[in-house]
Length: 312
Image (cartoon, rainbow, N blue to C red):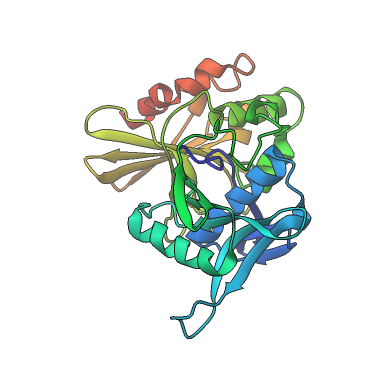
């Protein structure tokens, strides 16, 4: 089934010129690693959409298996009211395909933990199992009456204000009035369940212009050969950008960065395009009506159409 954590994102904290992941339960920072991102996406889901108490969320509990010399560590354990393991959640990187080998490894962990339920997740898909009388049975739907988690707050009812998105690295800087509201509503709609474009975390070495491109992106297919990776992002220097990366036949051909502060102020140098080794400064307002008539869901849903105009 589609992962509960799909549209959640870990909190980001700056440490000098680097960014780190922040665990809101442990109040600690961690290096940005794929498995840690997935684990903290799941923590966000638990804290924001369920009523599971923080005090009953366990991290990296040591697991000693007879055939292993050193103790292994379980990613997440959710404890019941008697503080006995109820759900074991094993988190893999988003790029890892969940298969029987991974499931068997998780089941081995649970021999020592003794949880009643197992969730195997890569942040894109969740596979659920119930452990009963020594047997492990797959749970096909979260509508199953035996399902151990209950969503108490639908995603669309969360208060994802501008501060929420800033803490997760999707915007930065100071916006006020209408531009602030438009930006907040645009990012919220972009990451809502109403848009079904695939989601990928893209990791780029080095800097583009003056900031890093590492972020979660939505990747709509433009045509048979072309895809656009699109995301909002806040930079270390305190500016907000809409970034698009054009991939043509498996090769990244161009990178577009729209400075949203400059766009909202109607500045002529609001966009930068790096394509075929050439760097150009553009007026984003000529192609992108993001702040023109207030918040428009259709503008967000048609971003591939608007952004492709820059690459032509």
